[in-house]
Image (cartoon, rainbow, N blue to C red; front, side, top):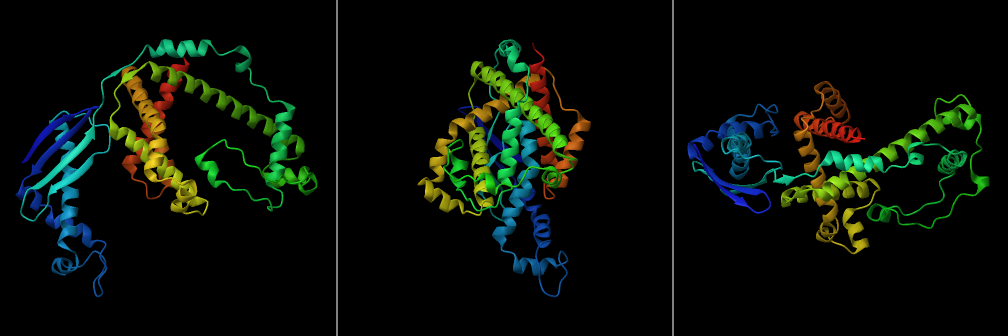
Length: 359
């Protein structure tokens, strides 16, 4: 039914070349036409109820063939992986080599497989990092100055919005200082019971300060925890031996650039104009962020491998709760992808908790 040739490529990638037989491919014609017809609007017919002969006159054959190919490969790709014992770990790059009615469907699929990975003694790595944390760093206190500085920042944020500053550059180069005019003390709203009550469910200034102190402490504890986790995982990554698949690095680069474009667009700027302002192109940015992307891809593989070694799995009940929250916030999200994302995030959290317990 499906003839395939598996070609092993460098860096743990494989290319699957093959054909789906003509009669098997042709069987997707009516299914593809029906699916495309669900979104076609024609006067005199209800949506999704347009007769087949009318659809054929309205939908180009090339579009139907494209839909047939997508449906056929969506169904058969997992079977190809299973039959050939290919442990794919990335989205496949699919190219169609032959596409015509009553002919075999020719395709090439490139994907990354789980690379050979030699982990260090990660328990020992974690123990070493944890043992080096100084006692004073463990005892997190909140100073009066930190409380007063935060209050001042809140007052400034509620001051009349007459001091504008350019934030666009900040997205590209975090930490770069911007010179801007600060509101004067006289322009700031007075810090009193009325002010804090307008901010949220606070009784008075005293109540606000107590809750603010708790929040700052919690934030500092979280920052300290993240800092420790970063040290542990960086030590493990540095001591690991793995040849990174190129596809995984490209996927991480896509994510970085997508987030960057979203941030720029939300600020009301056009991404193309932003790039012109920086005098950079997309390939320039891909080159610039490549090291970060490689690190993120490697992090994912290392966490996955530790979870496998230690038989760490996300709690199914927690996964279900997380999926419900994702689907409530993102109505168009694919439930299966949401589940995979939730499993990944919760498993990674358990891996970090395991590493933190090595002291």
